[in-house]
Length: 76
Image (tube, rainbow, N blue to C red; front, top):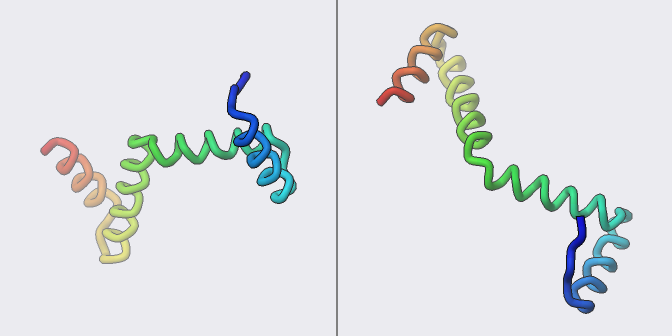
């Protein structure tokens, strides 16, 4: 992958990367991974369902009740 950027931005980026003890490639991969994670709505929704399931379990709901609740919510 080739990335073009202004010299000033590249210099500042390289200083930042060096200060964190990473290579430019490591930092770019990390930034892309974090951006995808932040913007990936399906992962967010899956995480939301997991949190809802844990909360229902903590309130005494059974696994089949949780599955039914999730299915009902998705269908509505």
